[in-house]
Amino acid sequence: QVQLVESGGGLVQAGGSLNLSCVASGSIFKVNGMGWFRQAPGKQRELVAAMTSGGSTNYVDSVKGRFTISRTNAKNTVYLRMNSLKPEDTGVYYCNANVMTVFWGTKDLWGQGTQVTVPS
Image (cartoon, one colour):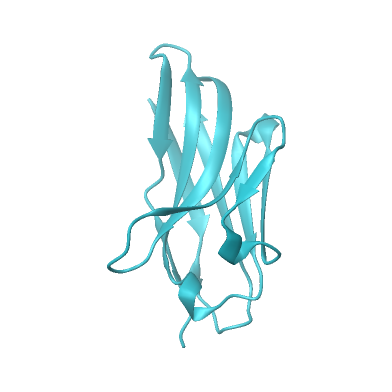
């Protein structure tokens, strides 16, 4: 079995910071791209930030300059540092990873989601 487990999130005042982390565990051969999505109430899930195994990054325009994605390949872990948080950053944040497993081929996995709330 292969899974993603997230941690972090919570409630923070506008202008504050939060850190999210996500670990891929199980029978893993290699983790390819990893990223973070978010879903606000009544809205579609959107890509926030992504990072390839080689270190290339991609951000949605609304978080550029405020959020930083990073990863530790040896630990199959991806992080999201969120600074200068705004009320519009509120939502459930999901980790996503494309994982080459040992026994079951390549899978696109999702974490369980973690709530981030920035009151207005």
